[in-house]
Image (cartoon, rainbow, N blue to C red):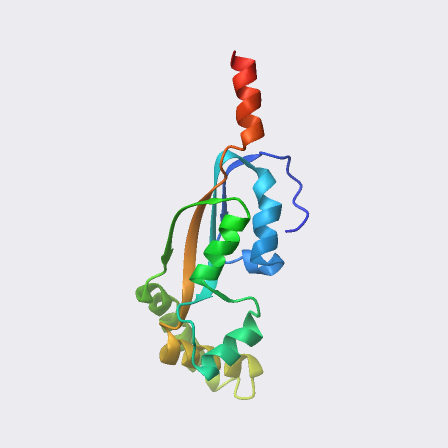
Length: 162
């Protein structure tokens, strides 16, 4: 992801759902920006804190899983510092979480008898417990961003068109 084989300004849209964390959100913002055309759109989703003071258990869980988890406000600051315009942002719905975890819980119950000693199943149980107890303190945030036309490009376009 950090060495994408594309020319600069190759895309009018980059949809990066749930993957910017792999390279770090601030790094992703920097690395993907040159790939966007002027006025191109970048959509990223990211796990965020919805509170300034999360419960100790949920904070411990998320810090272990995603050390760079930030508040929505901090992510917005980083996005603006990277030179993007924020078109909109929103928190995914509780129903989205339910739609993910309900089938996972059913599958977990199906596997418990045959995989009683599975650490993977214990980890999933912990994740489900965190979701059930603390959703509202964290969520995924969708950020829809625009790469503004840069001043140099505007100047060059105006000179050519004169």
